[in-house]
Length: 285
Picture 1 (cartoon, rainbow, N blue to C red):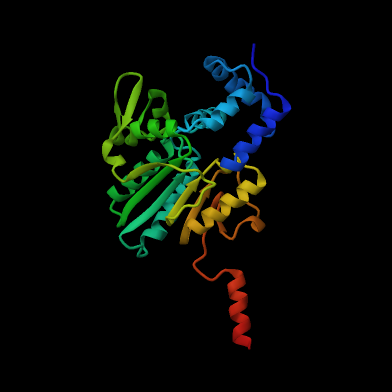
Picture 2 (tube, one colour):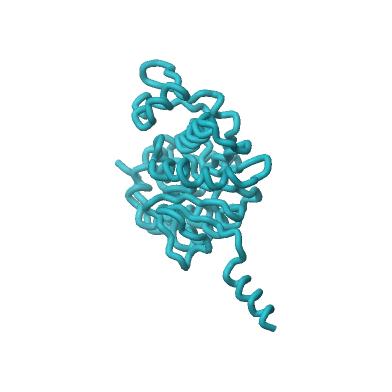
């Protein structure tokens, strides 16, 4: 029989996931029960309360990791929302690479899951360079809160059915069949990618020229989304771009970034509106 959540246990889990990771599970009681009940039984727990008590005492953090992995949806695939990759190739890359960005162009795939997004991006960039474009060195940081999915991303071996999402020329250039059921990503594509464990609710010290944070905020409540947006804005270099999921369009009052294309926002190089008003006022004086 499935182990059920009582009201206090459900409230505790919802609060923990919101305060720690920004993830909103307040309408997901059945999901929590379905995804966690078997794990509780396997470990010999008779209630969620006893499991949570043990989790909070676990110095290794592995029980927290198990909870996060089971309660978050790591669903992704190659070429997801392909319009973004078309815009990168035809609009954004021609604009940004003709400017002097110094030695490196830094990219952050936030919430990278099992890695399909960052490898799609790496294929696109390699193809763009091979077509004769002048480009700086590219550095891609791919982050997720789950060590389990990061290990899968670093391994870069995927089910053969996922090849269907990729253009045929990319399959030939960047994918190698391991057996009839699996393929691997060409190792040369992995040289400029680093995978890191990162809680998006925690500060990030690095600066990026392009951030992909797609289909992540749909799991956040309003306050967590606002906090994440401030972080993404502060982490983005002036003139840089933020790509979000097409189901995550932002109201103008929630962000200082400028909408450029559907689900694509840009950080203005100019003064923000408050600074501009202050500057104009001083000139009048």
